[in-house]
Amino acid sequence: MKIEPARRPSDHPAFDRKVGVLIVNLGTPDATDYWSMRRYLKEFLSDRRVIEAPRALWWFVLNVIILSRRPQVKGRDYDKIWNRERDESPLKTITRSQSEKLATAFGDNDRLVFDWAMRYGNPSIASRLKILQEQGCDRILIVPLYPQYAAATTATVADKAFDALKQMRWQPAVRIAPPWHDDPVYIEAVTNELQKEIAKLPFKPDVILSSFHGVPLEYLLKGDPYYCQCAVSARLMRQRLGMDEQQFAMTFQSRFGKDEWLKPYTDKTVEALAKSGVKNLAIVTPGFVADCLETIEEIGMENRDIFLEHGGENFAAIPCLNDSDAGIEVIRHVVARELMGWYRG
Image 1 (cartoon, rainbow, N blue to C red):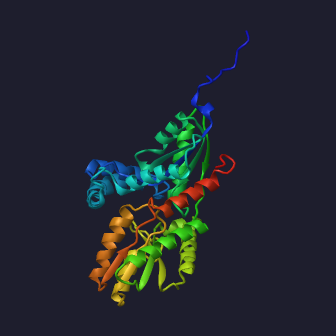
Image 2: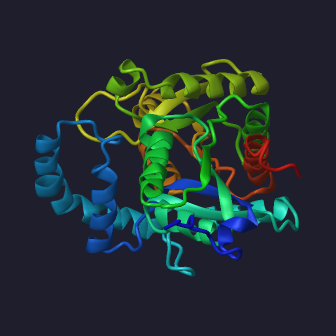
């Protein structure tokens, strides 16, 4: 008996041959209450890319110690910045808007489909990949929204995407966009927007700190390129601004736990500057493409208080590029570059 090969119906979505673009940011809790924060923190801190401690020891520390009290603390922090109108975090609001404006930037085109996801929390990467495929995308470009590569950020986005692909019978072709830490379009955008924001201030900063999210020093020693790419971004910005390392310095924020992290630490530097007599300080966060807890609360509130409490007088937290025209142009540029061969606009 002759067996006929299986055939797909001609109206199967994959025959539409569309190209999907999925932008992905770090993540957000669904709400600020204890259980929402616990779910989010557990997913985040269970990621082996984020925490590389021995699993048995870390399971105990995470589940018995950290998740018993940290959800309340972080919930209060998120509550300070929560978007009440939409009942969501600013990161979710901004990332959604970035996706919508990115689609507009490419004009009316039925071959491109744009969407967004979070690595931790909702909407998940797996759910959005599924929806893009159902909309006819047989090729999908995934853009981790991190200008600088780190295993704990960019790589874990790829991990989660590939986990989803493992469950698919008919997989779309997938590309992961590389970092853009030294791209001239990015450097021009962050420095131009910084200069515009500085011009609006009622004071002139004596020092500008370029604060990046920190990672444990051990990750650098194991070969992670993150520190080097942050240093390149800061150097290129400094050169374009015509400043030296005393006027425009690089620091690292958001350390967690007792291990040594990348230095210099932002909070310790802010304190030292205030004590040394610096009265006017601005902090820019070029490693973040959207304002979030780490920029709005940690920089704009915690570090502001540190500076003022130790003798500083004027402080400014410079907004991220967010969904501004300059911010969308950076993402559009990266997407257009990485779609070459798949799409010609």
